[in-house]
Amino acid sequence: QVQLVESGGGLVQTGGSLRLSCAASGRTFSSYAMGWFRQAPGKEREFVATISRSGVSTTYADSVKGRFTISRDNAKNTVYLQMNSLKPEDTAVYYCAAALRVGAYDSWGQGTQVTVSS
Image 1 (cartoon, rainbow, N blue to C red):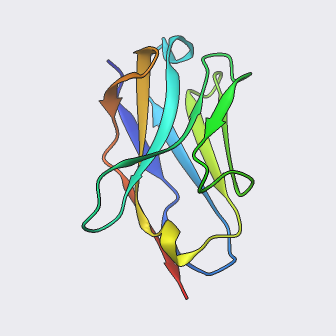
Image 2 (image 1 turned 45 degrees about the vertical axis):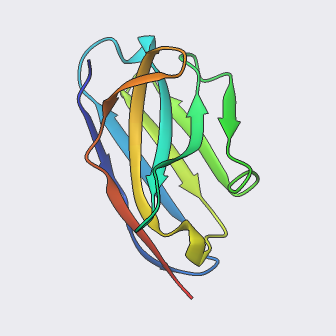
């Protein structure tokens, strides 16, 4: 497993932007596919985006497609989530996660709060 630490959350107005970062420990970061998930109050955790080990392949939830961009820098052991055109419904705690096997996210960060005011 890897240890993951998210940062970059905060309070932003509707239409604003934030960039989340997730720093991973260890020397095997490039072995993991990485994902971002979020959980709003009273709701279940939901998938936001994922990126392959090399960074070539990405997938997004329909709700964020065209507004969010996931990327990674394997030299810095970091994955990013650029969030543009933010909406109040994007308010949630955002988590990054790592998967050695496709879809099997077994390492999670502690989360970072994103709040979008209307």
